Length: 218
Image: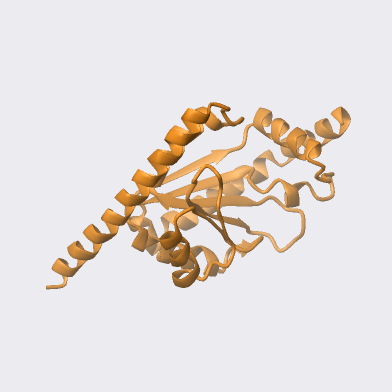
């Protein structure tokens, strides 16, 4: 396995300039779009070599077949963008931009994560996302995998979209559960309780948005 891991890491090294170009291209597309002024924060990260090595080993240990031929089809988050919005009502404009950008190709169908039934209905009915999953951690976010090439096994970018409130929960969770989940049950229960508070706060921002935009139209 050690030889395979090193061969896969060499691919990462060889494509470093391509990954940088992909990041700059996607960032430029967002910044030149009409929706950019509605985005509160846009974060970017490139997976480090050490984190990639850990992920490859984990994938192989889980029985995932990975080789030089399908490397970019299995590892789709070498480049990552995180789009943070103030209000849930803004999800739709970002969703449509990502799905219908002529420069990009969706590598796979969008995935939504949530534990809240109302949020699940919103993702399904308003955004048309059929693949809605629940994580035990109560994580909430939209995930897209795109690339800018019309070829198989080429570098991809993962785009995560969530509210600023959900991001605050994610940062707290990440502090204790990444790259390995903490086994403390009290900690996990507390994070779930915090997730419920965040959802309540997010729904309150929906009301604030609706009231505020109604007044603007008076």
